[in-house]
Amino acid sequence: MSNFKRSHLNLLKVRVFIFGAFCLGAFGPIWAQVDHSSHSEMSVPSKPPACEGSGLECANAATPFVMADGKLLLVWTSGGKVSVAQSVDLGKTFTTPVVVAEHGKSLDTGGDARPQIVSDAKGNVFIAYAFFKDKNWNAQINKALSDDGGKTFSTPKSLVANGSSERFPSVLMRPDGDFFITWIDKRLIADIKKSGQQALGGSIAYSFSSDSGKTFSPEKIAHESSCECCRIGVSVDPKGEIAIIYRAIFPGGIRDHASQIISSKGPEQARRVSKDEWKTDACPHHGPSIAVSGSGRIHAAWFTQGSARTGVFYAYSSNQGASYSKPSRVGAEGANVSRPYLLALGARVWLVWKEFDGMKTSVYLKQSADDGNTWSKPTMISQTGAYSDHPLLANKGGEVYLSWLTHADGYQFIKLSDK
Image (cartoon, rainbow, N blue to C red; front, side, top):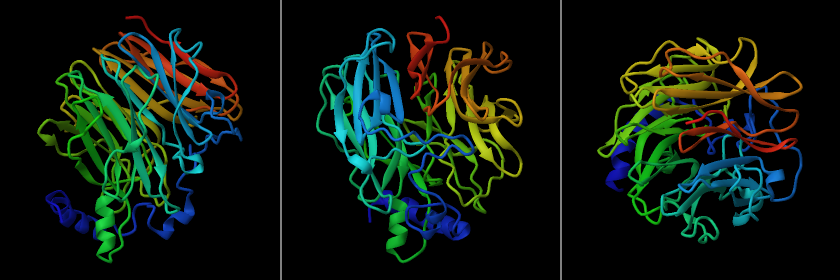
């Protein structure tokens, strides 16, 4: 066994015995309760209607990235394919899509699954996505590269070669141009199962690339025990270090959120964001969001159904996650709120989320000009009557845009602020 595995395996064995069958996994019968690939959005209808094409009009998830030259790159999944297109007019029109990969029904299109895209100053484009390798929901993350600004892509290849399962990649670019990727990894769980013990859940793994995604450093484990079906939030701090947030598993099967700083020296201690006390044997498919401001303050938003609080909440930390402010509710109490997303530039912070009123889904925005100390009143930005993706935020040279994919009203790239 490698040093990488041995260093974490003993600790994880202890945690597994403590937690018992706390976490939903692709390896146990508890998954009969929840479809591992379902588009779960709690009480908000979110499953897209049948649409067999691979175009943007049939997409279930679309992820934007603004290139150094101002072009908008958009990657999406539909019809079992991963496709990419460019726009020079802020999403009004797109070039003919380039199909990067085709996996049919095995493509991971779960409620929190989406393809990832990032591009460096030289126009190198990196894409990551996941697909299922078998009927037990074991997945593989593939990467695809472009050296011509997204016009053509290499044949997709596996990001890592551990042979277990990886899902929910999250990607960003550091100020020095290095790419960072993190994902939910099952190798430690698989090792325990090989020893004949019951093990469920996942771990948070990560890696860096200094050559535009061609090669990555040996992957490391940031945290051994996490929920395996929720996306990971990522952000970069003023020092170029990475801040992540994820739904961790705490003793007793509590699925609350943790944040963590990943520096060049490795992962720092995981810190609990709030004590929501959500003990559940259901899979939320509802990951958190994180943004780090110019002062280094960490802003976090998340969904919970804990015994201490239920709904979507926001909090901040001014000491790298050692402690957080008292959580404040996002949206009106009793409203059907979901999918919060944060972005921070300097002392300015933007927070968007979805609300469903029984007929239509709306995206709301509130802003802070003083690093989260005070906030504007919520403003409705857009609304749709059919399926919609998560609301995302994008930075275009200091201007902030809402990226929102809807089936009834098309893809929207809406300017929210000036520089």
